[in-house]
Length: 432
Image (tube, rainbow, N blue to C red):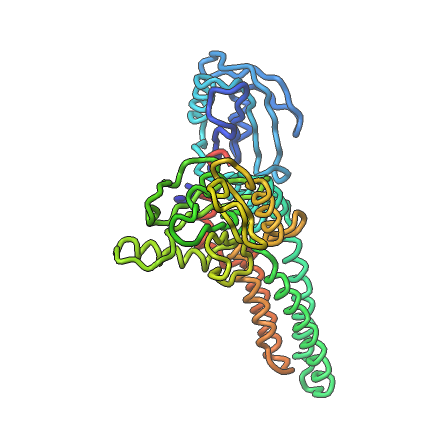
């Protein structure tokens, strides 16, 4: 995303889906939003009240009959003057209104995510809420939607601001103790108390780092089917995904590369992974596939092992699969294994439910705030700064508190995040 032309610009964009549609919403934000609306629609309604208006071009031609809404700065989504045009959703109607807005003084087309970036710059949202909003726009499953909504509504912000408020109080006490450093006995007592409270706060932050991360919801639970050749891995992956993505034959070694299939099962995001059969092979290409299969076993969140139970790798989320029970001689499964047939569908429902149940133990809870990787790194830095303060030296402790505050300020976007803002807001659409 390139930088905007400047804060004096007024931006416009289609905020609803691409035409044709029943209704389209066009947004404008900036110092010229009201004057442009008055030029096209006449007197504006009261703030936050919709009004029916006839929209005209500069020559007096009727563009459309619309609903017009006005939001005054700073009580708007961007913190600037905002006008929304709710018009008919035909392509020609939308183009005519946008072309007319483009001709108004001080107006230009918005860049991707620029409305949200202005909201961030004007203090309407912080960085964690912007990240949650980006994830909410990209959510494809119910669990992704719920988790992103918690972040977009300020769950992480409130958590971090609570820690920061306590850090500020501790820092003020530390600075006051430094000012009275001549009183060694009193200073030592202050330093001891501050060190105890700082370590307790560091422990709270560290505990949050052990919670399930947002990436699991965003990227999906990685379910890997592994085992020897011809164990039915590809057939099972196809059956679970209800697709024919993996090639199925009776020839051993058919699958030579990793095949990933993102799916939503029971509202939970999964990535189903088919792998090459694990065996010694003289084929150099197959050996590469076998090596990749071993790597996938290690990085899997849930492992579907389709070989002999005794040969199963150690794994924290292991499901033993006895496949092809439609084939004569394979009716009796090993103990604790799921019996399935990708051909008849027998056993797939219990296995699917087991995947959902296992996922619930890995994913964040429905009302649990999930940190993303960036947030966790900075919270870990804050916790580390407090932990590394060492003994009860008040000057060292004051510096540790300062570094912890700086780390938390990076979490919420108060400071030190300019290098990642373009990447974040580039994830948004033009009208957001």
